[in-house]
Amino acid sequence: MDKPADAANWLEELGNPYERIGSDSEGRVGIEWGISGVPETFVIDANDIVVYRYVGPIVTPEAQDEIRAALAAAGGQS
Picture 1 (cartoon, rainbow, N blue to C red):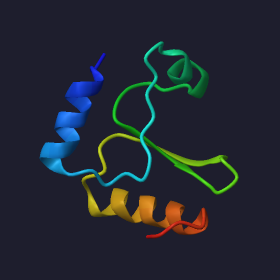
Picture 2: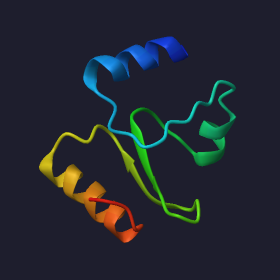
Picture 3: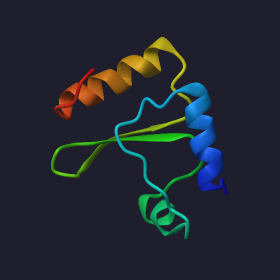
Picture 4: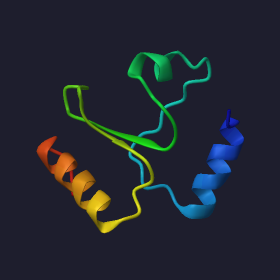
């Protein structure tokens, strides 16, 4: 498991594109959400409902388009 300081350093080095970041130090949320591996990206709407899940790195144009579409559908910025 990553240590919070390691995650903070990684984000500082590469840039932080996230509006919010959660921590699951006990591993319970990962089990409840059915996380199978990292990275996984979840788009959560204004009602705190997970409306989209993407498994894997968001590096291809197709993956980026999927995330942008999910953000737009959830009412976020694209």
